[in-house]
Image (cartoon, helix red, strand yellow):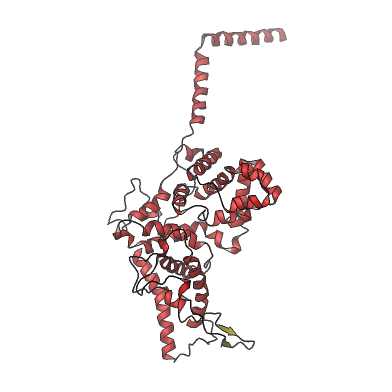
Length: 424
């Protein structure tokens, strides 16, 4: 898998740049920045640069309260040079060139360089962790043209890469980039519909998920749901971010990892996400019921409750209320469809050990930790239901064995016989 990632980078990022530069130097094929051919290397370069500029801006802002992503990676990819030069210098961006009314590409202005104050510049040959995430997202975008890049994907990738790159074992942390790519790809295969605009109104799209969230909240806390509806506080104002970014903007990174540990471990992980979102609102219901629209907006967009354990406990309570979750709550095998095989699904072992060398690629402890987020299950037991059933069975057994039961039975038979004789 790791060699496959290197191949992706070689074919998707490095070779196109080399071919474009080679064609520009030779000048024989006529491929140049003003070429009108939409299939030219320069036309694709301009289009990719627009996406790369957005990814660059988003990745620079990854976890601003954490210095990790601004630090230099211990294992920069020197052969696979970072995209820094492409972003900062020689930027023949799409905005630099314009098409006149006659369909001719013309140079509008020289590309503006970033000032040194815009970012902390690392020495040549080094790259920050956010630059690694930038390369990951750019590669994912190129390999998934039907989906492309959408703002917020960086917030989903950040925690995954952090877990893998901060592994204390340097032998495994050195492979954090390819491991994070396949983990991110596997996770996005389940939530990608949230990022596709054409699917927004479908059941699997983000609007469908928000409708499910509203229905769940109405079922769990009708007064709170009615109050928010009365105020006109639509779920688009807050639940859109909750569901799309998997709560990555609502908690500090250590707390977020705890939430994801429970969220991704559940076989119905994105149904459990709805329970977590409802639990967040129910735990501040008193403040929401007493607040006006502006205060409610502030509460749900800047969530004030910091006890993650209590949020998860309340979400677990909501989870066990659903009848179809009784089997999974009691530890029985779930009938829910399994997770698609992928970078994480391939090492779903019972003992948590990595695959043997002969059975698969080596897996780092950091990657096993991310895999364990999906491997562990909530083994809950419905003790209340079991106890009631046991008491019911004991009651029936005692009634049959009790002497008074025989007398009552004989009396009923006698009454039936008397009624039969009278009717004759």
